[in-house]
Image (cartoon, rainbow, N blue to C red; front, side, top):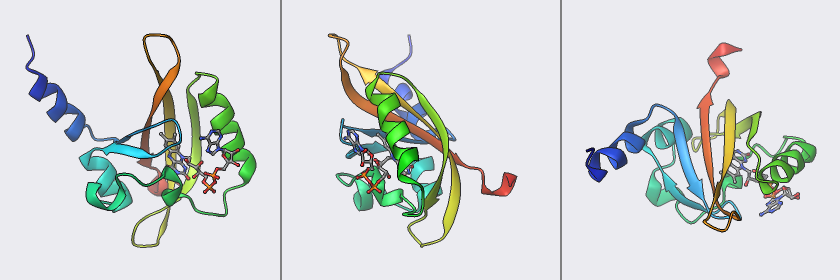
Amino acid sequence: TMPYSLFVETVEQVPIAISITDKKAKILYVNEEFSRVTGYQPEDILGKNESILSDKRTPRTVYYDLWHTIRSKKVWRGTLCNRHKSGHRYIANLTIAPMLNAQGAVSHYIGMHHDITQAH
Ligand code: FAD
């Protein structure tokens, strides 16, 4: 059987930026690719809200749709304009999935994104 440490190491090294948040989008975990894509090391960003990545020019309706979808226990897929720690903007192709507890209620959210700026 696979050791648990290998499972953790796999998530750490997956080449997609992964973050795990509480129900209010407070960041509890980020993997190595997240730090590479966003510029934020874990110590910079753990405990902060995902909105730290927001380019404030994204229309509010996009976030409404995002939150309506994930709170309804559905997966949201979309494209957002994010701001890197260094200040430059990048296009993020994002998937946000709700994590459900044993009672079927949303307990956390998992965010996965990659930078698709080059593809434009
Ligand atoms: P906010 O006030 O945070 O949100 C704008 C609107 O979203 C609110 O008016 C409200 O309608 C809704 N909303 C916000 N929080 C909640 C809540 N807890 N429950 C219900 N509705 C709510 N944003 C990015 O810009 N880039 C990302 O890469 C990104 N990744 C995310 C990953 C995860 C796992 C999650 C859960 C969220 C992510 N978000 C991301 C969304 C982020 O949390 C913010 O909602 C968004 O950035 C807008 O921030 P804001 O400060 O402009 O406004």
